Amino acid sequence: MKLLVIDVGNTNTVLGVFQGKALKAQWRLTTNRAQTADEYGILIRNLFNLDGIEAGDISGIMVASVVPPLNALLEEMAEKYFHIQALFLEPGTKTGIAIHYDNPLEVGADRIANSVAAFEKYGGPCVIVDFGTAITFDAVSEKGEYLGGVIAPGIGISSEALFQHAARLPRVEIREPQRVIGSNTVASMQSGLFYGAVGLVDGLLDRLCAELGDKTKVISTGGQASLVSGASKHKPSVDPSLTLEGLRIIYERNLPRARHK
Image (cartoon, rainbow, N blue to C red; front, side):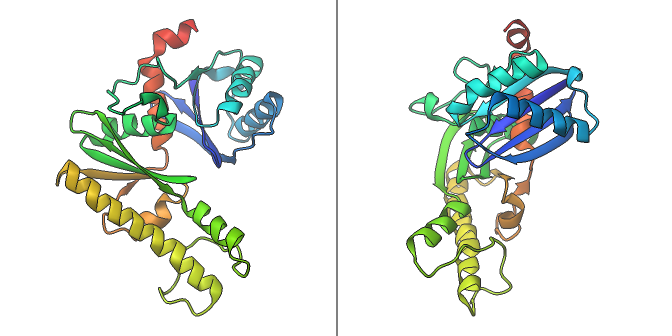
């Protein structure tokens, strides 16, 4: 039997199917707040068909969402198309880690999933850098405690802000430029966005690793992890399926509850 995991972010929704601990398939979609439960169900089943996965083989669904309006739709989709009551990563879900945050309810579900997977796979202390709508940094102690972190603007947000607020600046592709000094507007913007992100990441990692100690491991995930991590002096391990792995681990820690929901 297989487990469907869904990570709903503000910009992208990532889905994965696990058989045991093996990730059999993974897809990245644009998060669409206007989609209906039927549209989600049909889309997911079509993706399954392309990868030869039978919907009837799905025995569980685990969801992490930072877009609350979509939760009810995903719950309806799970019941209608898979005849399963989805388990959401929310207060009361057993994660296996202590959360040392002033208000634990403020921590995004994806950040908890990342921290669980990073500690399980790499040990602590560690820092997880997630390149999403925001660039988040999450610190996990040597004992596996979630300590908190940092939230900074994502590269896409920075790019869009330049386009929206500077009349003569265009939208540009976010990529590593050939040289730092741009000889035209597009190249100059690409340099600023790319090396600005690298500088932000390195500067914050310097400070986070100084607080956590010399043995701190750094892991990156998210849409632009490979792009930025290669230029970072910290050379973080890129783990594109980290959040999905965290959801699998958390689901397994909640199996009795998941089976009786």
